Each structure stands twice: as C-alpha cells, then as structure tokens.
Length: 347
Image (cartoon, rainbow, N blue to C red; front, side, top):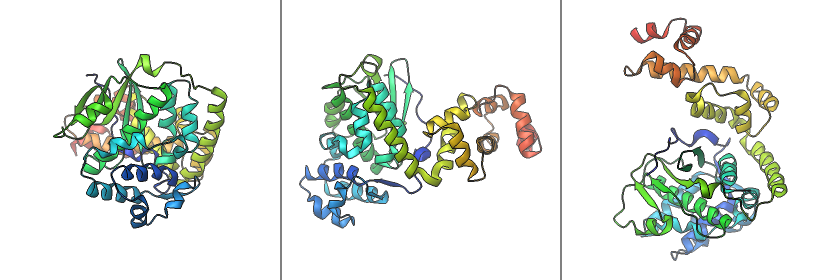
C-alpha cells in the first residue's frame, strides 16, 4: 500500500464568497436517490428547491442544501454505500464548462489538475489535492464535512464521480493502485471492493486514491488542446466571478498548505488563484493587503502555535514555516513580536 503525503487541514482552501453549488450539479444527487425508489420531485420540494431549477446551468444554490439533502437521503436509504452509485448518474453538462474541459484533457494527469483547480465552481465546498508520489498520482478528496457519517457518505459520492469520470475518459476500466477511506471498515465492504477494484484502506487519515503513472500519463483519445483552452478561459472567468471577497481566504489556505515546502512564491500563488500576478496584487490591494502581509501574518500565527508545543525545536519550527535556517526565523519573529522565539517560549 503506497503511503503518500496526505492533505492536511480542511476544505477551506477554495471556498467561494458564499458556499454555493451549481444547481445542475444537484441533479446528480436527485438521479441517485431515484435509484433507491425515492421521488426526486418531492425530495427536492422538501429541501426548498424547485426541480426545474436544476436544469438551469446559471443558477447556484446554497451549500447547506447539500448537507440537508445528504442527511435526508441517509435517513431514507438503508444501503450505507448508496452514494457510490453516483457514478451512474452524472453527465458532463452537470459540471458546466468543467465537464467538457475534462473530456478535452490530454491525460488523466492534466484532467485531474483541472479538477483540482476548478472543482469549487460546480461543487462549492469540495476540495481536491493532487500530489506526485513514486507509485503514481495521489488524489485527495475533501468534502469539508469532517470525519463523520455525513463526511464519509459525501466522500463516497465525490470519489465515485471522479473515478467514473476517469473511466469515461479512458473509455473503460481504470486500474487504481490503492484507495484510502476515512470511514471505518463496514460490516459489508463488498460494494467498495466491487467499485474500486483495488486495495482499500479503511480508517485512513484522508479520503483519496492513487492512480499509477502508466494510467495517469497515458494520452487520451478524446484530447483536444484547442477545446480545452477555450473551456479553461471560460472557467477562469467563472472562478473570477464567483470567488469574490473570498480571495483573501483562498490565498491564506494556499499559503498554509504549501509553506512547509519553502516560502511559496507570489507567482505560484497567483497561478493557483487562476489570475496573473498583477491582477492578484490589485485585488489584494482592494482589501488593504499584499502577498507579504498575508504571508507574514500566517507565519506569525503558526509560529505562536508551534512555540506552544514543547516537542518542536526552534529549528524544526523554522523549517515548518518555510525558512531556510533558524536565524532567519528568529529575525522575522523579533520583527513581528519584538522578542526572540526562545524568549516567547520561556515566558
């Protein structure tokens, strides 16, 4: 079983100004419950949704409806693995431009990179992190609902969709290297074994899977670079439109996630925010902020937390905060607090 560096933290990285999701994306859930004998019209009505709205690609619905919908489905469907059948219920149009950009991707590696970058457009609170490992591409999925029954069910839903999307792009079966799930070992694990068809670790620290490099990098017959670029341009505009004042929060999350690998560059931050460096600077300035101000505040807050943990040395803390040496951390901390890190720890 491959061990990859799991995504740390929660799904705050790409929240939108208001936690919303595409109404058309909600159609997947309605199709899913119909497979278990529930009436989608009455189900949607109880959630306060007019079912016709799910056909409108421009309507966004509040994220709390997602939670209420999943909780209601969990109460009414006896099969604890029911959300895996979401793989049977999606269509590219449910993801708007992202669905078609996915189909036009050159490989699953680039397709999953697109999904990582733009997943918040259809799915709001969901977060994906792709990490290179020796065994293959490690894809971590966060629903943002925690390590509980709701979070586990939503992870089943999200992972089943992603893997089904991979299978569609490949034109059939996709051999996974391994799957990790936060949920405890179920009494009947056969639905998971049938769907994933690989080694599964239950009770893991994160939900995700590893895609072998031979699969991740294989050229796709449906690849179309021109179409992919057209849809990417649409997605960047859509992301810009819906992210709004949440930009500062997303910047903070990106820096927190990447700081231990060294000081994240402003260029890389701008790229992750799907905008140019100059645009990022202008938008942060509208909030009276700069890249450096945000980075310093994050480092200061994290330093205070780490210094309250006696089992971490000053050198270790310096590296965790992205400093190349302890002396650089000490100078920065003195600038922030007026005292040295050791003095702060001993007071």
